[in-house]
Image (tube, rainbow, N blue to C red; front, side):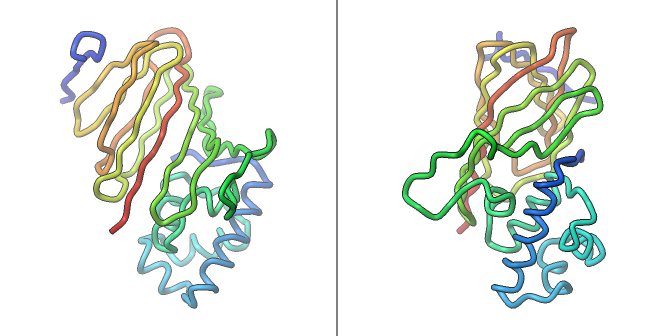
Length: 202
């Protein structure tokens, strides 16, 4: 049973963008070869099956955000490295066409990576939209990972450790997401929010 906490008073989907799929395919293969890892070794490090890795490198599947997180961590990279949303220079201005939609909901919602740093230590800036009735269940991130969220419109339900937090428009929240968590739209209006993910590795 979940326990509800109202923030106002308490203070695996996949991408359907062919270009993203092809970029991920190339980047995973290149990163794996640079690190001289076999598919079996990468599978053991990431917890992603060898068959799935083969499909990713062939560009034959749409990996979920959770799968990308696992593969990126195993390669010492970030999701941004794999979708090519960042570069190596001191300053990168991301072109308008470069943000990557990495999840699409059954009712039209989406999760888009606007910009991210290179891994393994990484910061990512996301924009999300969830339509009424949509929910995204996320895998646990590495220990110590934090997410900062700001809800622009609608009402967001954030579930962490079986506790439900309701975040209305105009409010912000900080959460440790090194455990399973989920985001859901509650009410009759879509919820739109921005999110920063901070993931640090020793």
